[in-house]
Image (tube, rainbow, N blue to C red):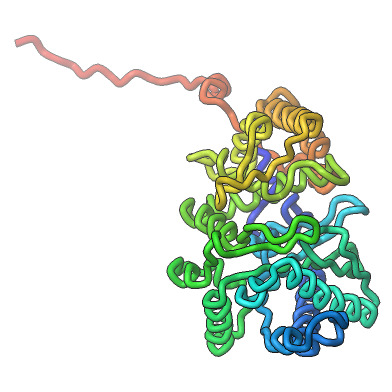
Length: 395
């Protein structure tokens, strides 16, 4: 048997699979700088709402809109710390930054106000993209997008929340800005869950704007809280290993599919549900135990665990059949590689076949694990001299 954890992750080293998946500090700073510009542009756009609204919008409504202060919350892989670098040229690094607006004005005329708010956000991002040399698109119905240099983009979804929750978000940001200047998303990963829940939005009252279907219930912060709790209850070592397993599964998906495949949220839910109680302090073992259950999980309905009524998995049978077949192939390949049926070079090839050339091509990173029976057979025999028998005298 083999321990191939060294291919995946090694403390104090930076040449393993997880390191190849990690964005550079320059890429991270580029995303942060772009996010700051996006937020600044959107805040200014609401103040100057008339510039982006059409003439048929009544002046009284324009005046109200111009006083709205949008709040922002980074969500998705960047917030969960599961963001990976692209595997293929057509893939991109992404950062999702939600815009939160108070419900009171929207509820007057929901469909019209959704359209007006998209006009403002789209207009602001179009102007910013032109200024920065970026590209603006609205190919996704649930957000506005700016594409950045270096295979990256920022998605800006639009949410409506209760007014009192909007006020709490502003108070939370003001408080933390006064204390440590950290971004809003930092609260999600605080060890103090009571503090985190102060900003948690009621799932019944949070709505995502969809250009095609209108407002629909959605609360990304609840998902982030759920994932943070799953990491915390496993303790630091296993919790961080679970986060890496999510990244490894996404790395597999990005290698196997240029586009499509199971969503990042789907893979995250599968990893959490399939994670072993005892991961033996090994990344390869934890990964094997998760992919062992992956085909069965991907054969069934998968729901967002923060919203049990919300299905997150495609219902097209042909798509599911292909995904399950690929998951079976992954499990069979890793199981065979770690069982000891191959040599170390064969183990490297097996991992590379499933995860691509970002797996280090170094068989020295693999350790052989000897079964107890093998240890006994390989232990050389030793001559054991019997203890001398003392002289005795019959009495």
